[in-house]
Image 1 (spheres, rainbow, N blue to C red):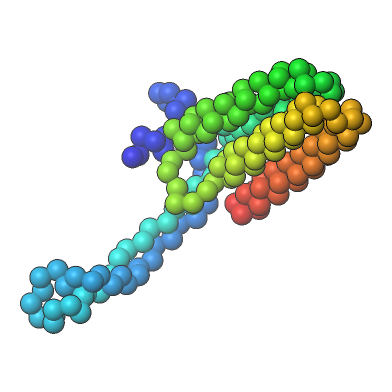
Image 2 (tube, rainbow, N blue to C red; image 1 turned 135 degrees about the vertical axis):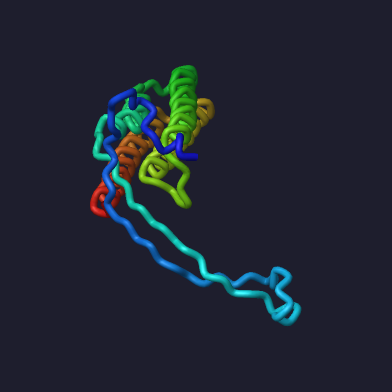
Length: 192
């Protein structure tokens, strides 16, 4: 378990860039349904025991690690955005977009696996997890719009309608992704 907490790139004589941001020791009472064989307790009443809770807040001040873990996500964002700029409106022109978006989706999933091995287990979603989720949603939205444009082209819709849907995808994706990523990163930075 502790090996997962050490920076993977730290060699002999180097120190990690993590800083302790908080330290708290508390106790809490936990009720168990079992009396654990204590004969002085009536059967079925359970037992209550105290538990020591240790919380240590850590923050990594090394921006390079952040770039290594999230850089591929922002590259996927740009590639996905670029697929909307392929403005062909015939059915054959959408196959390249679908292939690029499939590769982008694959890249996000692979990067999620990389991050899972680099960040220690947590009880909830981290900022990097949130960025992965919005990137997945963005690529899936782009895939849905591309398939909708492709189907419109197959069924003979006007090129102007196809281009409008494509432009809507650019606008919705750009504004939505940038806003969500900015909010996620800002909340993580302000939370410490």
